[in-house]
Length: 551
Figure 1: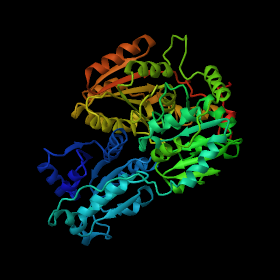
Figure 2: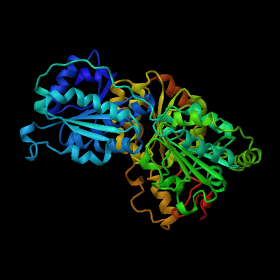
Figure 3: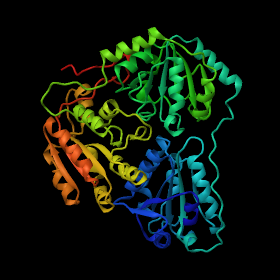
């Protein structure tokens, strides 16, 4: 198994030992000079670390757990990777073959459990098949639309012997079968005839390494370009055609342009409900062109006028040769006017500490030398809006599953995959309560992970919904009666910690934290009533966004 991992270029494995994987861990002991194993505090953290490693490096992440509860603890992390199309191989141990199906100690049918949340999974019942299963797992995880694959290995298989023969990794090739001349020419006709084209780019742009092709595409069409949360970084923030994120908490500019455009081009995106909101009001004046590698996404949520199935990098490169360069002056001027009316940078004269200000300063001070990871909630949406992300794979977030507890583990994986690069984990106090045990992992391996907690002492996003839609009945979202001192907690893990309460403290603390090149926790005390706006209420159209809370 380990020789096959080396074949695939694996340098890091995140895991936790147990009885069913003791033979594998014994082999890891002997391979410690070739493969780095990172001992986590909880198996869910191992899955998130493999995920963060994969998203920021473009390589397949690997996690390892024992049978039973070890395997089930991976499930949330596997589902997170599945929803966000992240290449991962999860390896689990299981009881010996004669004990399968007999409710044996720490037995679970993990292939059955994970069938809906993996691209494929395997249980190895013959040691002669083990090598090819491992090789196939890596190929499946990375080929086409990426995703997680699980390999379950009964304990007696790990004790068996067989001959190992080296095989080079199977090449990952762009899927271009359906990129026919007719399909591309029809798409080009649609694009060339449009007067108000608008681009909606998703995480597929980053997976396909297609940022350069997307920039050329936008400039040829003279089209404004928005992104999903997963697509942040796939189109440079500073590019004049960039208009921010789209959807429930997207910018007013993006949501207005989506409503007014005559041609909406979705590239590597899947029309999530958080993007479209009320589908009957989504892009009502537009012909929709959908470019995606996964045929199952075409016409699943939104009916298209034309679609292209295939690798988005290859598709954009070929389309760019067929586009007649435009000068959509009036349309682009309209976009610029909206950006001026609804600026994406945060401007305030307040003297209190605001989360948007913290993120603006963080973005400025890191100047694109850091990787930003987020947890899930208000802080996530503020980060999507106010972090000025210029490059792909430098901003990662749990988009599809929305996994609280994702951030710290993913940040550790990012730090392992990008040695020496500072990694910021933007967290809420509710999320941090779920995963702070992985501080022990960050400290153990002295990784430069800086967690910035936006501490409003409530479950902020849920409470925001209660404010807007449940007449301020704050049912079980107030954490102030059991407040945790996160500075003391971080120090208990032997991490460095700071507490920020005033705006003038922000720059000094962030710069000092970066200079330490070690795990740091920064607790930022923000107001309980800070909200994320704009917001599209449930059931409303993108053009029916709310700019502020009306008391």
